[in-house]
Length: 254
Image (cartoon, rainbow, N blue to C red):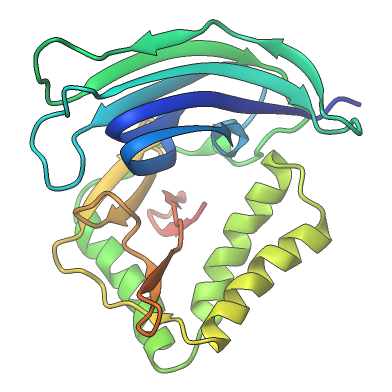
């Protein structure tokens, strides 16, 4: 059985690059120079069918307009990770965006590709739109519960959220139980080696994604508001956390 992995083969120059699949951010990086790489898109693909991709080149952090050199190019490729050499399956059209002769606030490209995957994220089709009444207050309460417990040395709430997220990742990224355990254990190891819960930034804002079905808190820099830091190494560990709403209007980890 094929296990298609949909990758974005891209290059970007002098911009903050944001990549979304089905209105869900799967990648963001401040690129003060040039980068060429591939990233997996399966984390935003919840079943077979039409998939929507959106890529933005935003100004570098601290800037209001794009650098005159800002540009990006990309192509979606599918490979079969169920083969020893990750055999090529197919690719979709190449795109080149920018640079522009005049400074702009951003560059944008939208496209559609068809994915055939051997899985379905079972609860995705049942999710309704998040009720935005008091959403910021509800999100702040959930994040504070996780953060306050962590600051007291109790990371049970944090890892309960991480394990739910990794359960979904295991399905979409074809991860084994050993690989999932390794990913979770790596975070436990970071905590033992000095990473501590960061305070919740009071300026965090609500981001609604997944065409209205998912939500989270993000900092001003666009990163998830849930993070750990190591003061000795000045490193941050961003914890990606998305929440959805159940039939009783409760927010739960997606």
